[in-house]
Length: 439
Image (cartoon, rainbow, N blue to C red):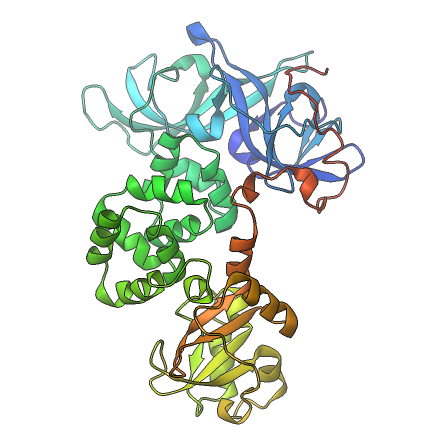
């Protein structure tokens, strides 16, 4: 095989997978191994590859022809059947990293940071032969060179076959720290329930809030249910009010009220308002935190708000102008100023002088069908929602609408239902049966 004879798993995470023609077919998300009794190095069965639709498929190592700098080369044949982990298989990133094991020679407890894969000489087989660990507390409880790292042979450690009750997640998170929230959510979605809870527990509140917003409802409820009530309330406070309301609406009434009571009143209030609307209406889908400005604000003020890094793109497309107080649901709605108009006017221009008053706002009981037609008719990505008294309640965005238009299992949709954005023949082998051979 071309390329280096050994590679560490952390260096494989997220690496692009290419066919022989140079077309990208996906990215590596994990490595599948099979632990062996007696301390023998485990064989590497293959890679879990995420293709363009976020479907995860199995790529046997026998179909890997090269592991080179920043890329994996395959024979071009991908089985598009969804990867399902077998009982005899172990995911390296998902299940081995952060595991507490024991050095055979000293009995010292160490933490697994990484593992090295090596190709068996003169064969196409791969195996795990090295373990990169950090020293911790020995069995006697004494602190022994805590923090020191070392690389040892697989046979020099024991404990991989034991069921872990507190595996931790620091190094798994470090492996995926550069992922965007939707991609990290996809990683969590494919982990075991136990491992998913460990990773969620290790994430900071803001990061976990971002990830929860991208997960299916079942995963959201499961993760939130395994957090202590106080932390669950903190995470809900960090979520966008509309996403927090959607999640809380899936909980039993007593649990929902308990968490709302634990939230800060200023964070719980907009969530309670959103929960009062039907889920498939403009009021139920809107966010209560769009960009709101008074008419005496300037274009420079508006652009400064639009440039906020954490602002979703649909909400940055336009600002909403209201008479004081400049907040929902009490500000009197005057109109919108679109982002393109902000770019055409001098920075000192008052937004009240360029406001678009012709765009009709939506009442909160507007249904999904009418809302979809509205966005399509006016070619916009966000729309104001206003009550009978003319007060701005919030804004509903195209991504909120898509969440309700797509089927509930859209994350599990076959690759054939999406365009092949990665190029090449990622979908050409659909229907092939996953086997650990070239057949």
